[in-house]
Image (cartoon, rainbow, N blue to C red; front, side, top):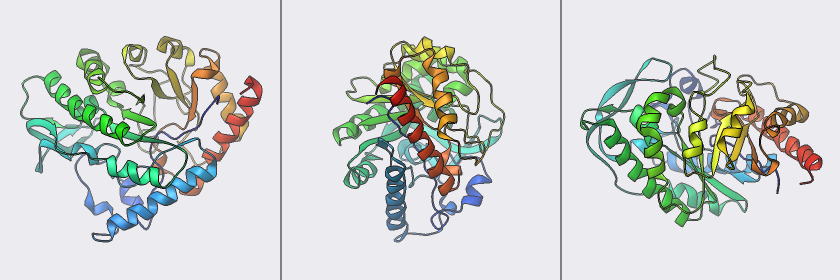
Length: 341
């Protein structure tokens, strides 16, 4: 099928599950933020299951070809995995600057980073048990997790990034063994800190993908539209992804009005073209979405294009998010007619 449709990862969590006002009023948590949940155990896990079912059905109803669990059980895209690793002190967190330049509490590295157990495998099992569509699950990338930590152990950041990469690699292999169709690695800090990404980030990412068989995607973004309102029109770190062993690269083009000529630099990789603007709650017309995708089609082949939103859908109202996804699916149908898909 030409122009398959998917989400980047997150979907809005219900108000009865999480305090969405608190979530939107702070920077994304890097350590655990249990105070965001409206329920406590033993009821929280069941509520998260129920909310995940809602997210799955919403994606199916919108017509998406590849669905995720909506990251419903997560306080942020990265902290659930990052805080499950050995070698970090969560009781005495450190501080690191967020990509916006503001200090944020973060895991403090006090020993070697190791994965103690699978973190998201049960989430994937739940997803696969409740949909017949292709499935996708996301994990935070090694470079980004290091940037979201205070390093009090490693003398060399590159060494720390490699240990994070080994942990991510083990998780990805377990996810594919459990039946994931796509595993996405989120590496937004490669865009935020391109010099360090060039020094050791890309090598760490490739280590995370070493020996992995299956469709892998790397997501690079400008930050959540709900939090970071100004964004450049071009990526500071994107052509370098041609040197990554991933099969797909996920980018944002809608809100940034990205100069899509840069997509030529990615060679034959598939590109998740972010074509839904999440900076406001206007539900686009399908033709408006298709027009954004056509900008990418000037530079890459139809077979390379996957339709997706820009990132940060969790901050939207659910009905708006679902309306935008329906428009995206209808845009894909328009494009299939144009390109014989």
